[in-house]
Length: 379
Image 1 (cartoon, rainbow, N blue to C red):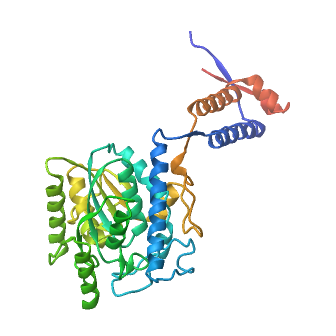
Image 2: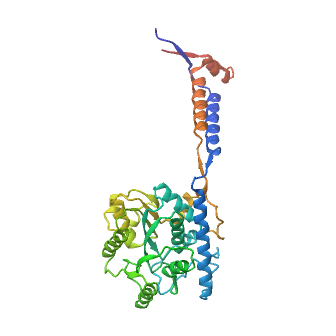
Image 3: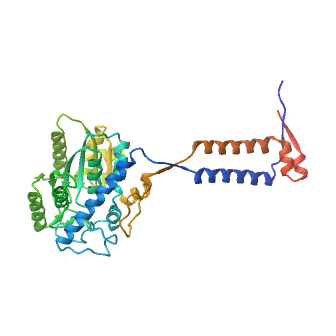
């Protein structure tokens, strides 16, 4: 036997308003009452950030010792890690906002988080492409790798874009040697390129190139001297493989937008920032170190689009003071409470059933209007 259901011929506006109100309250409750989860490895995140902060201070002291005054307008956080607007070793223009945002020791915690998500563990080998353009991010990467006791193989570019490590006597490769000598870190580059356009110093003056070559020599690094960025890509891959020996490289970290590491300008726009496991075919079609590792099914940490990444991890954009250790969403993640969302769903569905299927409820909320008592059979 078929059952006969009854429903009101029209749904009263009052009923609709009540259903809308229930839905909005449920949505607000799910959004507001989120649970906070602290990662089990948060102690390592804090330790890496503290180490990065010590390294920041050491570089600042060295800059002051060299008589290189800080610029309050460019470096409101007084970090000492924002470089000059222009110098003989400045490769290309750069974003001041990105450089200011990078000066935050909590980026080390972000790197620890990404490494953990990628499954990198103690003793794993990791390849790194460091850029003179982002010395603060380089420091944070080194601090994270040292805290996790990962074995990095680093190739750096000596030149820097605007506001990066572009003080001729204090390039990035000088900074890492300084930090090693002070016993703060042990990670050092195994080789360096000139950097700049094409990774071969294109666009730099002869004087600027000589300064970079002298810096590579004084830091006792092997210099990549290929004539094109494609050859430099191949040279870098060969160095990584050779230094890794019989161990597998677990992951690649790129810092900045070096041509050899990321590819030409067309490829740079295709790679997403952060931890990535794949990339569009258009990006992989252009020769680059990042592309080579992704083709080998190796994850990549792409430290680019820094303001975007900062917003993703709850870090400030262009902070006016050096952020405190522990500031940022990376240390405690907010997540939806499933039980609350499920309860809200039950309430909304129950309300819909009550008001749209129950004639009595419809009559009650229609406040005695004639239309509420007009029922239509539904078989």
